[in-house]
Image: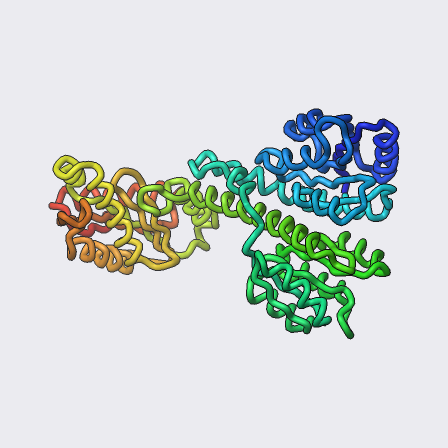
Length: 457
């Protein structure tokens, strides 16, 4: 996978060296010689990943990383810190600043390329979610990027798959300050638990007795219920080739033994934050999709949803179309309710009316607000007799119990008139059937209201 990599280093030879290496692997590169320029490039969306030197004059790499990760516009961009600093405290400082990884100079080419490819793949998924989630702003949901960036990465459910009791206890002890940790030494049981219990992250030892830990990572990545669960490999020095393979097929991160407890907690926090970031974007996207087809006041489907689904139901050849019926319901004297009790009371009646209609229709039926106080119910595989029975049941339930308004301090008797129609073989579009239902509704109104009228014979 190709990508645009921003190299940030104040020394030109270092920039050229990384440009050459990445160019040979078909990555596009651009460069910044200081922190402010790097931030500006990221804010313009010009790169997919940042290779960031730590030791720079003025704004150092740690400060640049903190700035990028705290800004909703740039928080999703992976940052790999590249430096000559090689102490665990330096790595920890970089991870605490929000870095996705920390590579020590001289950089091992295999580690560099595998890490870049892995992080670029993750960013590609995040980018798609970001674009879709941003549509939620149109529906007044708020800024999904700001909400997602505020995540702390704490209070996660962690699955530790480790069959060395001493190592498992030490790691669990470090993590339990901020997370709930489950230790599972059996890889078969771990796979089942991961699929059933909804963990936020799994740590997997690559050297499980009698079992290939990398195979377990592959299985976790392939199952629908665990595919999005972040995985961190626990590896020995001799496992570096397997670590690269794991990163290539989608494992998120790794730790080399002996595991530094501070680095462990920092990497876990980073992965949990990334998962919750993408989960928040998915949630915003789902909410926007739901709001796009839902009437905000009643919670019923809206006219757009109704038109799209009716169009699909009429798309088949006329000779192969199953039975289909439509009800158009209109609250009687609704203007009088608004005039006498106020529009807020009218809205309460509409919400209650929608709920009663929903309670007395089938799951397969389409119930949509048609406009004003009108509701349309589409009844698949229903003839005229069945549709009239359903309509009469709804009419009776609406009339049976008055609607309470103004915090249950007042009650309003409400009735409904309903027109019923069924699809004809010669109908060219849904509008033909709905027009017949609308004419039947008009007759119900003209005949005294609070009644069900079928289409004209």
